[in-house]
Image 1: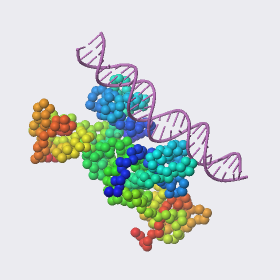
Image 2: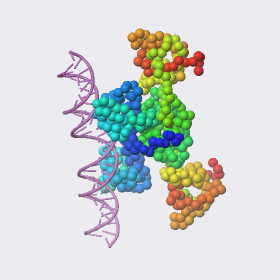
Image 3: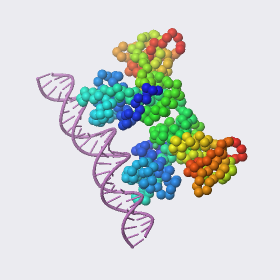
Image 4: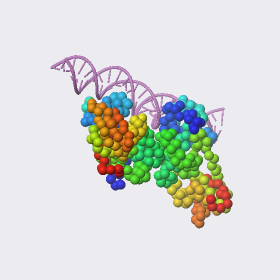
Length: 234
Length: 234
DNA sequence: ACGGAAGTTTAGACCGATCTAAACTTCCGT
DNA sequence: ACGGAAGTTTAGATCGGTCTAAACTTCCGT
Ligand SMILES: [Mn+2]
Ligand SMILES: [Mn+2]
Ligand SMILES: [Mn+2]
Ligand SMILES: [Mn+2]
């Protein structure tokens, strides 16, 4: 409790738009060393010049370090806020699934707007109601109140060992269509499977889930994170 | 189902601000014949000139009929949208109380922002989860999908008959402090009481609730709506 | 080493929502 | 019936967030 109070009333003008920029920069920083104007622009479906303008604003607010023509990086404060928004997002996703019967392909869009509007009080009640969860419906880790982020597996189905018993831990996809398809295959977090074959040259990957066997495009396989599963059924 | 679909994609540029203006005009129209610029300004804590500007916008969008220097009124479309937002607001209030353990004095502020952000899908799930309720935690009627509004009592505790068995049906107050006070008296919707005495000249009103007797300021009494309660305990 | 393409920033505009200050109506008391 | 106070609208400015077009920087291939 004590620790989490720290921020809260300090940053006055944090708008929903700012929160989305921070989240975006946060995510892109994990995938690439340099976060460039154009990348942010593409992700947010906004023109590069708009991004430049916003980056200046964010720099003024001490939320990012911005070096023109070079790139942006979050400051510790910016990082903290990004994590808070991500926490909101994932808690909401999980809540919608658990408490209101949404399916995992419906929740991202809802959460994308609700995340900006969740009061600390409501966040707390939802978290409590869910038993302070650590993973959302897609297996994405939920940042804790202190900014701690649970580690998750980094091995993808595209480069997992053959024949071993594997467990799906996370599905890194936001697209509703694909999520529905993945669900029909049974490739949801917690599911067990074996990798049967991997075609060469980035070709499809064949998996057995229960009694069924499926061929998966390698790009899809790369979005599915797995870990080796202990002995037998959970 | 069929009926409710009618609107939905039609009005493009309905912002949260617009929704709040429509709600305000809707409520004020029930209390007074003429809805004037200054009244709206006071309620929304905004300057009269800002209201004038917005009323023009609303008129352009065919949401209100606006006659300068005279007053505003909602068009049927404006009315419909106002009711939808009010439905959102009251469903959210009830949901927060029923599903997440909020108390009735905490929910108004939360709902004031969430109401603008509730998708139709989420609204439907919440309504279903609550069993298509007709009253929110304050006894305020929840507009139905077709715009129908359940009738509620109009008799207030300030002008109810003495000695009769009464039931609280609605508490028309948004102020958290007062709501908490009212709750400590047990004056929540559904509670039974008798009016024991009414002091002259708009003086306080004395009520018995269970074994306890309280004196209430007449202004407070006027916010509490009651109806005569049948024979004995429900 | 340098010239052009790709990436980025600047300049200037627009839109929604608000404000202050000034002008204009309405209304009411004498 | 009319003059002033109260109420309202207009004019013009500001702020956040976006855009297009033009200028500028970086980078890479020859
Ligand atoms: Mn968002
Ligand atoms: Mn997720
Ligand atoms: Mn509102
Ligand atoms: Mn209410």
